[in-house]
Image 1 (cartoon, one colour):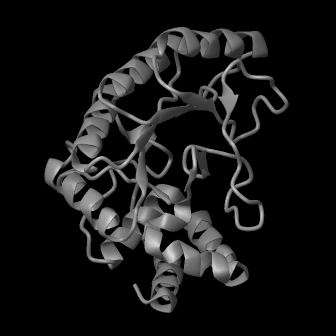
Image 2 (cartoon, helix red, strand yellow; image 1 turned 90 degrees about the horizontal axis):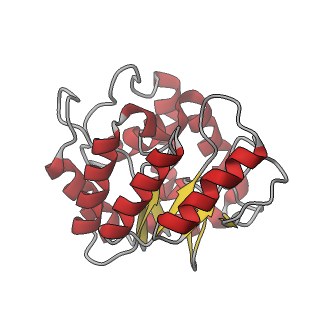
Length: 246
């Protein structure tokens, strides 16, 4: 299982914490992670500058001890996407995923032009995901991200945080440790609504950050304007962890 990682900040959240990133990667590696996804929704994408996204990726690749690292390269401009893709390729990322720009209205011929540029200049295996259905049915010039088994999917569509990545799977369930995913899938009718409820209360980033804290791995606070997971969400999360024995 590939673990979507949060962005680990210093105490005042002014910068990323190199030490906390290393501890987080080691924490998940010791719990059976087969790789990592960086800069997805779990990874606080919209709280990071481009330079921070690059720095975080470099640290995770360095600390992953050879485990494959995937990266979300979504951005608001074609040049930004290609730049992030080329950077990931230079530093040894396994692959990239790109989504439609998060704001604004874009037409399919514009999407095709952007993704064609990635194909030509990105220098890295890239897949296209459309978690919000902005371009539903669109035939992409890059391969589409494959969905995980619908029997235990958390999200409606493939996204950087839940998709097939080569022979592995990126899943938000791995926030509890990759070694717990088999248990979760084995009792999916119990765990899926509970995890979906936590995500509904706070989103992927808040849920994963709170889970890490409860499991004893300090990744720092969320960066403003994002606050921590609320009390109701924490209550459900703690219940999940008790059942899992984490």
